[in-house]
Amino acid sequence: MPRNRSFPLPHPLFDEPTFNEPTTTPDPTGFSVRHPSDKEQYARIQQLLSKDVVWFPESHAPPDGLFSLATAWGPNGPGVVGAVQKASQIVFQMVGDIGASTAAKYPGEIRVSDQVSDECLTAPVGSRPAFLYILGDVVYDFGQAQYYFDEFYDPYRNYPGPIFAIPGNHDSFILPGTPERDAPLETFQRNFCSKETVVTAEAGSLHRTAMTQPGVYFSLDAPFVRIIGLFSNSLEDPGVISSEQGKWSTVPDYQLAFLSAQLALAKKDGYAGALLLAVHHPPFSYAPPPTGSGTGGIHAGSPAMLAEIDTICQQQGVYPHAILSGHAHNYQRYTRTFQFSGSPYQVPYVVCGDGGHGIDPLVRSRPGSPKDPPQNGQNVSYLDPHPVVGTTTLTLDRSDDQDYGYLRVTVDAATLRIEFHQVGQAATVLQPADVVSVDLRSHTVLSGATPATKSPPPPARPSGRGRK
Ligand SMILES: [Fe+2]
Image (cartoon, rainbow, N blue to C red):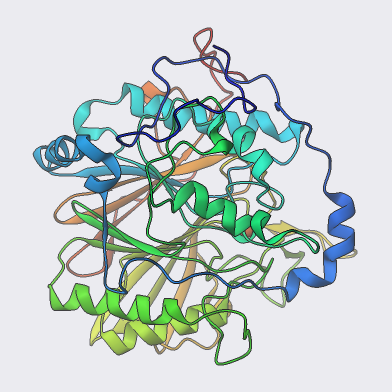
């Protein structure tokens, strides 16, 4: 039966989580529903994009609650966890900003979804990704229910595992006049925070069941790694995780207690795995120095959000091993160096918002000021002018504003390894365009970073497995 968004399955309540279709099917050749431009809406709401934040419900889990990878895998959970433990490492993928808002952008999204899916279907068991984690902005431009099939379910119909997600601004901003039941965060929660293992109407005739995450912020607990996911709300910029002491009175403060409790739990338990923090809006996003040429990309960093995160980390005496974000539609990898609890820490901040929606330049020219791209390893401490954690050094080690891509993360008992993969390379010969490794015990970056390189042209794919 052809895939179709209009004919939901007749028995939508499943006994167990279901992910991919029984057989690998060819890529869609276009959107199944008309996807008119959102230019008019943007012109209408321009003023609201910097002030319309949204309320969200408290997580069903307690602040120190954990949502386990085994739960997400259902009856296959013990087998998946057992395979990870036998391999003595876990592998997973992360990517942000996947949704194509126009037909012209769709091939980019499909290339990413094909490559992450192919990797799962072809990798040896010990290095097979155990899940995909979307760093926000699943469906553009306003998280509409009618676009979930084309922008999420159909491209990822062959992905053979759980797909977790934190919402981005495009999954939460409410267009004026939207009925409450159609609010984008309602749709997001129906598809990612369901209380039942159900196929939603958004999935149409596909079999992927809704995720059962406990809320729009949650902590994913897997062997070797724990990912604290925060919802950074609906503004274009900056990211907002709390009311900021009344500045954003609509935004509840649940996440401050949640982050605090999660870090306290890690400390109490002496958690020895990799502790990651995922948040859609990046703490840092590149702009040239005030004396430099050109101007920054579309999105800037979120210093107030980072200050809240830093403050809670200091209070609890625990800092994540890395912070992962999307939002800016390119790849940026920073290293922030500072003293924490009496020791020198080096923390990667990685932006990977090039998962299909588009690619934006890191620097734009302006009249009389040509753009001046950053150099690998450039000191950008000016992006971190008032750090809560004391004096810091910030370097932009690698960046890519030319290619779509995703992160492949590997964690074992001693090391966190984050690879950036450009799409277009055959899944069997995947070579990362960038790598950073972190020693879990000392929170220091190990050597091993490779020079960023441009990908070769996409190779021919086997017939029926993809579209350029
Ligand atoms: Fe975004």
